[in-house]
Length: 240
Ligand code: NDP
Image (cartoon, rainbow, N blue to C red; front, side, top):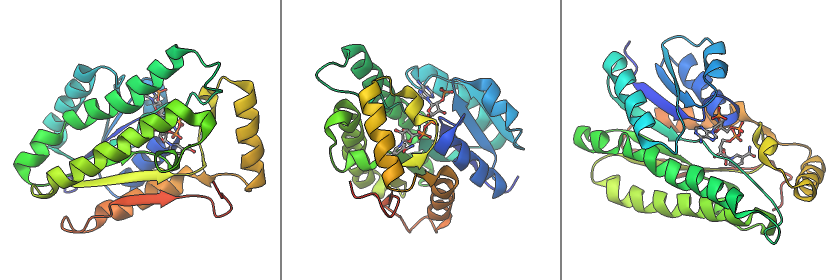
């Protein structure tokens, strides 16, 4: 295996799945992590390690990385992608939904970074891909806490990029607009869901997740001394 190992959280569907397929097609071994193990196994990609991981549990990521690295060598690209979007009317939303988004989208991202960052620094090589959102660049009132988690990812990523630059570790932020995935299945607030769907129809639908996966692969394939700092991709008709 001449291509290095890459690792992806939230690899069981949507953008994570598409990115796993893109890197696998390019010849990389892939560590796929998510809670739905069977979905990842059913993709039947070659040279993969599929692990049931909840990103809220730091040790589960660490063990999965250690196991995959024993077979394929060090993780050269970690995609901290796993996330949930409990979009809702903030005035009525239960704080338990806030907790879930904060735990998965912020602490989960840090747990994921933690599993590989020190090794990348020691090797003076590696790429961290951080999943934010267009909602990490501008606010939407019915995304309030979700926006907060994605602004967190933007802030941490910029600080990490500066910190890791002397170590030759790249930090790339991904900030998509509307992408066709399972993400809306997590929106439990009917009014918010309806408004989101109406806007989606108005803009002619979301972009395919495969396009995001290919963009990440293209950015990764640049030489290590060339960094795409951010991929901000929206449907052309998405105004906000
Ligand atoms: P999906 O719902 O299709 O994918 C979400 C992925 O995250 C799934 O693989 C899910 O796996 C995983 N996941 C969720 N919670 C956990 C957890 N606790 N531990 C491990 N894995 C978890 O949606 P997307 O592909 O759209 O979402 C991926 C990322 O993209 C998210 O961070 C989202 O915020 C971001 N994003 C999406 C946009 C869109 O329009 N679709 C726009 C901007 C950003 P499982 O349930 O098996 O654990």
